[in-house]
Length: 145
Image (tube, rainbow, N blue to C red; front, side):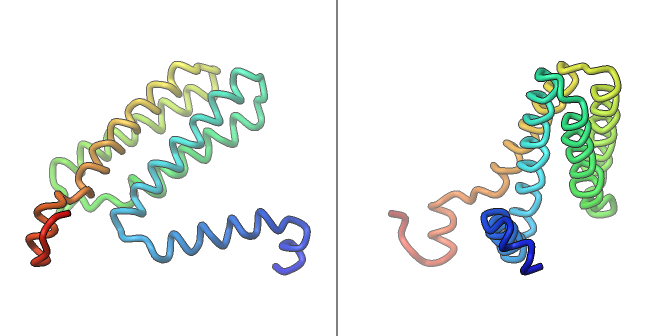
């Protein structure tokens, strides 16, 4: 491990920073990080597709599919989440299938479709995690600033 840090200290620093963020993040923040990771991978995939970098595009799309399937989809609790979790599961499956088709057929519009869906979900997720400042202050006994 230390040998690789001396060759790429910036990369090692970024890895440690990411691991620290993951280890200290709340479950809500972890899901937000998964959305961000998938969106970043898809932005790269779109640029790589336009540049004709087939191998890199494939890797970026695979990364996004992995985040969707092994992160977002795997984190669903269908027993507690009920119908909402089932709907999200179906939507995540659709996204993965759409990205596979985008990769095989070089369809940038499919990547953009999935990016837009993920942005919408992330926006809703972020709203869930943003407590009302007045409510939070009242719950803590403090006055809002």
